[in-house]
Length: 159
Image (tube, rainbow, N blue to C red):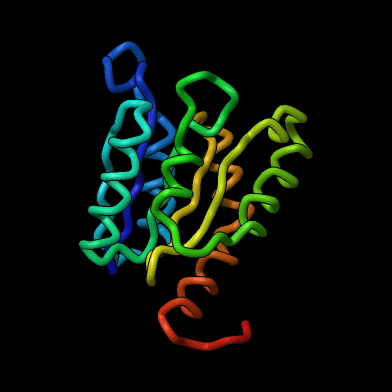
């Protein structure tokens, strides 16, 4: 199984900050799927670059791509737009679940514009860019994602 984590951050890409969200999420994926290959990349906040990376990973057969960052209201936050360009079908419940869970601790979670959806058999989920936000969001949907991946690959239809 191929899994990927894309951190979307100009500041991290420019070496002005250290990416903590991406490595934390990648570690969580390795815990959940120890035999999986987990690819991590760091990208600038550029819609075309993000879309191209998502398309490339889908073509490589990734089962799951998690993005961390670029989901806020900032002028360069374009991860949801790039994701929508790539996916065939949205899975809005995942994004709603992440925002609802996050808002229990931080009301600003409602400002996240992250989306989730499928391109073929690849599930793509946008997480917030902070380590805490990314980890909490992943925790909110990890079981749903596991089941969703099974269903998307033609497996069981009920938990």
